Length: 353
Ligand SMILES: *Cc1c(COP(=O)(O)O)cnc(C)c1O
Image (tube, rainbow, N blue to C red; front, side, top):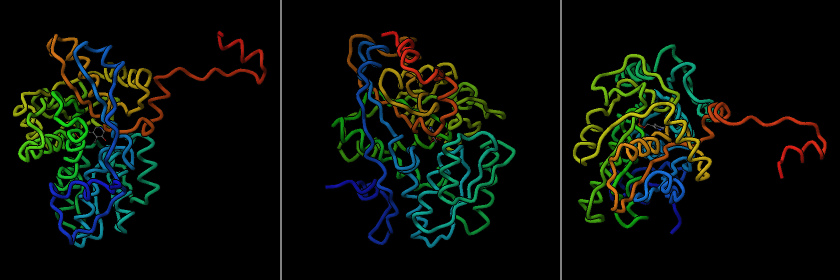
């Protein structure tokens, strides 16, 4: 059977009926890549897999939830949707809204969203407002507006977003034929860790898997409210997708970590950049900085002796978004091209052959 998106694939686990119009870009079915070199570098007993969510239609996992949120909004007769966004939600909302014929309004923090994401929202015809404030401010306003006006909220507070995002967990288990031992994931607004845990529980209750993973979530050190136990008024990190000081799904993220005997920890920007470069250079996988927080977290935990020696364990790291989303950061951390004359000797002299 050909793949026609997460709703058709997993409708059994989703709140859809025959009457639900399926608005899809055939999202999901993303690669689960074995990371052999990285595993060897990090820990002798870990089999690390990368769930490359950058391969979704708009380049991030947000599409899994957006297909549900937009389909249900159309079913309910909505004419417009709105979200606050660090970038990827707006790109996804704009694309799915365009496909459905609805209007989209997005509120983003001015000067704090990656270039590729802004380009996407603009191309798909979103009405973009960049506020002089941060993501948490933007979400507060969006909640007030969507409560009062006829426009549907498509942030992850929309329960259909979380439902659709469960599909990532289903895919991992379908490929591995079991649940991983550890599930490593970046944590921003904390909807995704909530969704994955719900997905694993669905499969467990349906007897598709016989064990559950430990959920290990990682915030950026400058935006780590869950780790600190209090909101961060002025979050800062180069990983803009997780630059959030007061996550909407805070409680359910903590619950997922607790119920799974996992944890939520933080990683510094330096650790994030290191993992970001390792993924690209050792595995050929280009993700955006926030995505690398999952791998940075596994490296940190391995160094601290969190994973036992002598016992093979499977770790899935979620790489939430594509590296091309944030070309400026990639160029900033990489070697610059060497500019030379258009001349054979000049070129050869640079090659060191
Ligand atoms: C949205 C996003 C996150 C954070 O996910 P939450 O569900 O908000 O915790 C992490 N990485 C990328 C690339 C994202 O777009």
